[in-house]
Length: 417
Ligand code: PGA
Ligand code: ZN
Figure 1 (cartoon, rainbow, N blue to C red):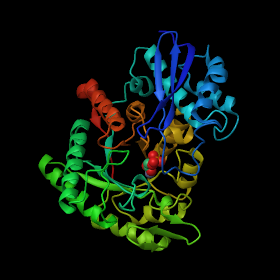
Figure 2 (cartoon, helix red, strand yellow):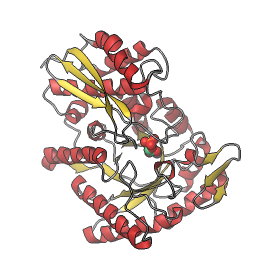
Figure 3 (tube, rainbow, N blue to C red):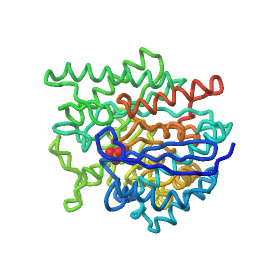
Figure 4 (tube, helix red, strand yellow):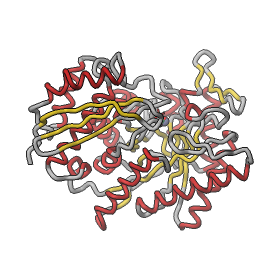
């Protein structure tokens, strides 16, 4: 079928926080694609700019007046050409003029339109016949830090990781049970607990940073025993949000403690050992590549992942690779702007033994593209919550992909190292 771009249609829609965001339709001579973009709350400093001055309204206008006429007539099959054109039209290094979210929505909608023009699902079009591997879901069960309002742990996310599951459906089943058990345990622990949840659908409770570890550890162990496979867990410290540069300390306000960099390193090592953490994201502030490298060297059987550290940026990842800072990287397309840029980062990561972790954002829509990207680009992990509409949209899409693949589907070869 023919995949020449005929038109782009942009509109303002809303994410799960009720914030304005952009949605773009790409219409080709033989197909159609639609994508909307997420938004972060604990953003990395080196992420691209989301919107031009004037916000989403101005972004929509740029699509109508500037971008749609330029892309019309191009072939949606050539993703890099489309993405390069977006860079050229923008003319800055961080998408200040057209907005990174504008670029991201167009880029993903274009990929889908191309796939649709060829009668293929997105993961098939992007990943080919060899794309048969499902990622393990990192499921956020307890929220803290900037993702909580009021009293909550200082660590931003406590994430279940059922790495013994043999299918994606089994893995997501485990995560839902762990999430439910944690809700029950929090209620038992504190009669004031009212079942509040964060944007990502994780529980928010007035519980100690360290107590939260005991709660999730117990739930993972119980569900692991019931389902008869290993359920581990990890954390996203989002340490840039705890870091006070003037004092050079990580401030845990819920605990009332302040740690300098070497104390933070000791604390992370202690947690990894005590709770057998399988995954630690952003344990240090986003400029401290050195401490990431030290922790990566010292930690055993644990993925050390950079989110704010790398912001899906190949150059920043290359800085990390030079000194072995981390062994995993969060991939958020809207941190960098286009699919081609994100793919370049994924491929660089894989070349140097870093595991790419495809990720949602705390403010998200029911857009499901990251489910397909995780399979297409063989990401061994996907981070997308456990419950809540925007998360379920992605998780159920992975269940559909697994179902579609039938006996060709297999789980990723996840090495916790
Ligand atoms: P976000 O944070 O609020 O920026 O999406 C999620 C994360 O830190 O992984
Ligand atoms: Zn993070």
